[in-house]
Image 1 (cartoon, rainbow, N blue to C red):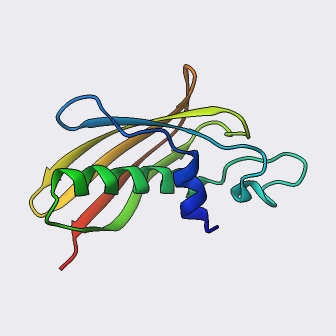
Image 2 (image 1 turned 45 degrees about the horizontal axis):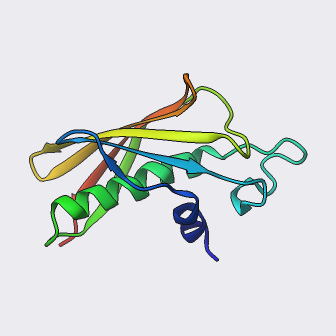
Length: 128
């Protein structure tokens, strides 16, 4: 099973909080292949996988809202990783989507309980 399929398997349902605001939980067991080698005897969720949580969820929200369109990620910016995420922790992803001319900006935040774990901004463009 590829990493994207494993992430989707660990994901809860996409919750619509408001017109442009969404949330989703994730729970990764210690057997999740994303922990392999990062770091031996002290597994943490790599930053790139934390960004992919937002990418997968934002794409799902964008494509539900714009059913006749597909999107591609353009970039990830303003990435801040504030605490390690370890196996068995419930991750809460909150994000908002704003339209900017032809692109969409998604502001993402990951939390574990009351502790902010990461934040980043993703930009998506319609596929042509």
